Length: 623
Image (tube, rainbow, N blue to C red; front, side, top):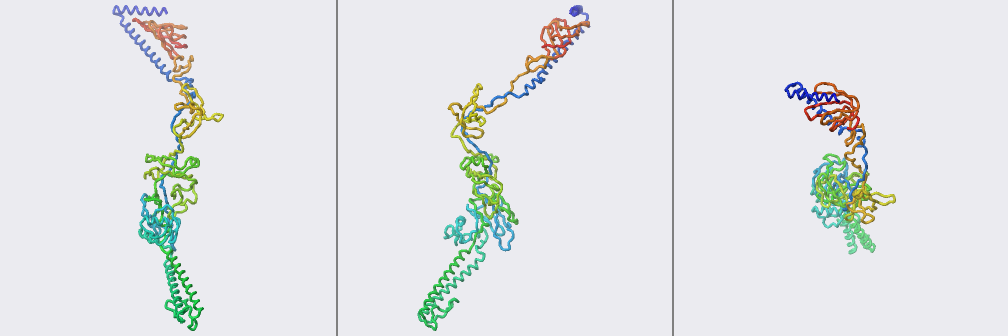
């Protein structure tokens, strides 16, 4: 160290002398170069220190990575106790359909030599309105038209028929302006025949006769009555002649072949008491025959006239109706539904499984939501069927009963089986549903139960059972203390359940109850414990290894165990050597040693003299 001090002193004296005499400019130039070198080395060391510090923020030890990625500690998840009205709701899907839907698949009566029924006229298309009495289609030259009524037609209505279906026909004809005369209600008489004939004439067709050869039957019956009347006249004329003069009366032109002369005329022109008795019996028989003939004529006249075939009419409950679909085409065979008609207000139809059927009943409130229209409508459950339905939904059903009209096949009648649809439910809106809802798949929210006013409500996951069978909720106080509270449960819905504490005051609105276990966030800024010789974490106090820099004022040097020597001339002195002690050495100032490796100590003097001492070695201790 004395050699270094001699060098520094010499350099200082030479520099001072040359400055005073204006000489030794080369030496001054060398001193400037030395200063630049020192400043460059200091700047590089500072950059290395900053880079090391930045590296420590990005590089993590395996222990710290494991600590940060390990499973977090667990904690309770809580929810607030609410006081409100709780409703139990059932949410499902339904289809908007007409209250009455009828498939029209007429099967006209086959005449002799007739082939497969074909559609010969189809004046309507899907969406068209339909009025009462309107022509729907023509099949094999015969019309199919509508009438108002709720009772499906199930038989041909002929003159002389009686029943509720006849009364329905009479009412429908009167609504269209065709009077039924003096026919009693439910009796297909002469007035009803005239009204039916007028309806057929209005749509441009002739009605089918109730009796195929009715004209011939009626003619024969009328001739029988006339003959019976003549026979009675002949008997009366013959009896009068025998009684008054005892002469046989000649057969008149109106005598019937069976008269065989005037009854009561005695042989040889003399009347006898026996003749008088024969005349009376003949007259009685003739009158009986006349009564029978007149009865046959009345029956023939009653049976004669127009009929209403079941295949030619469709009864709908309300008008105007709509054509929902057209399945036939002109010239095509009648192999299914030619038309599907919808009548009445729009309702929502759904099918329930066994579990939901137990929850729902007629009269419950419903919210009908249309995602397409973006609107809601309120209504009530109108019907929950007690028997399961099979087949196609809404196919050929009217007013909740399987069926259809116009000669539909078994499929339309609900026969022949099919898929199990469940229990049919019908929802009727409080106000008529918009026409845009027709055919839509809508959401039904049904309020199946609700609390009687406001009640304490907790999530269903907050309720548990103790080993002794008590129903509990676990309340959490502000300091984290947990307390189990026995409760009684009530209505549930939407994931919540109404509870009543067994002991009044144990639970109140605003309290928090445990509903599960949730992950707890790991502590921020938590690092690895300091361990000598390891790469540091982000927390302060970790060991640092790597290059170190110690800077201070005055003459700087590095001291440590080992040997060092200085060699060189002029203003710079280099001191390569080995330092096994701390990098800060005996230099006064601050030291930064972020990593293992070479360490350097630099000092800057306050005067014009600058010296640099470099020491290479290993820093094994803390910086």
